[in-house]
Image (tube, one colour):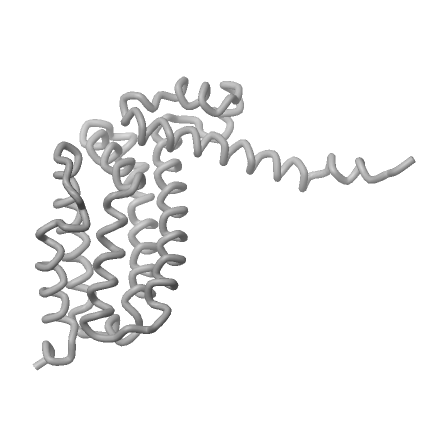
Length: 214
């Protein structure tokens, strides 16, 4: 006879099961949000997709706003980890100057074509008329912006990130890309050939290279 099963019933096992069920719910919420939008991402739809009980869902997320904001944060964190991996590969040969700038902007722009961006768009629009969602989203947005800044610094590299106008350029690129990306909600065209790309690259090169400091 073996005593091995006993430790499996301990606190660590319960903690693991809790984490697993939370992740299952978040994955289901992300899928509902991306596929069906905010209106289709009800707690009942998420519960059905996750295959959990009502009590289990409410134990983790007492309100729909908390659930969907956590889902967006979960998806964004996963995306940012993926971006870091892609950036490591794209920047492996350590390009400098305009070449690094071009690659960094291509990486940034690609993130605005992926599910986390559209999930966030659904929440931003809904938050305009939903005070509870707006309050929850405001906290998550601050956390996410800090994470995006950290990942962006790694993509650009210390030399470019130390440029005097780096923070301004990053903010300008981020807000501009977000606005341009909205057009892709109703217009199908290759994002990699968007006419704004050369404009962003030219602007960043002028403002972030040593010659721009004069």
